Each structure stands twice: as C-alpha cells, then as structure tokens.
Amino acid sequence: MRDTVVNLQLGIDEALVLFETLADFHIQPSIALPSPAERLAFIRLHGVLEKSLVEPFRPDYQKVLEAAKARLAAQFGTSA
Image 1: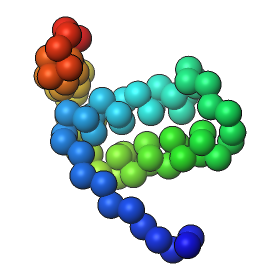
Image 2 (image 1 turned 30 degrees about the vertical axis):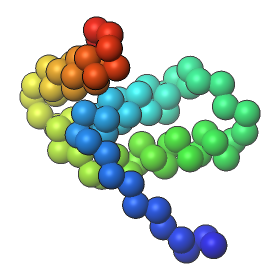
Image 3 (image 1 turned 45 degrees about the horizontal axis):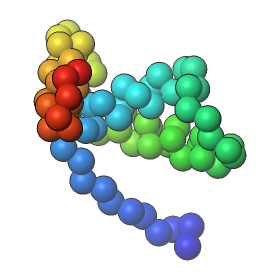
C-alpha cells in the first residue's frame, strides 16, 4: 500500500490558500494535531504544493494570494 499514490485536483485559489496556510503551519503549528503522522502529512502536502506552484515566486504574490482568498471567501458567502 505504500506505493499507492493519490492525485488531487485543486483550483489555483484553493492551492494558493492551502500552500500559504501550510507554510505558516510548518513554521508555527497553530492547528492542534493529535499525532506526528498528521503533522508530517500536512508538511508533505505543503511540499507537493511548493513543487507545483509558480505564483509564490511572483513579485506580486501577496496581491495574488489576497485575491485568491477574496474569491474563496465570496464563494463561501463571506468577505476575506
């Protein structure tokens, strides 16, 4: 079972927001996770996103990220 891979499809907005959230988590865990396995899963998900995204290297990344957050918040029915 270790060789099994799961492919996920995310919209760019979701990917950017998750990437940033997981980057913050990697530096300062703010979500209580009951086990080291869960923490490692979060860290590895961040690594996958890091390899997939080019937006974090854009000079206007903060603006791109804020726009993604605003679009997702609007879809949820709130503001960012």
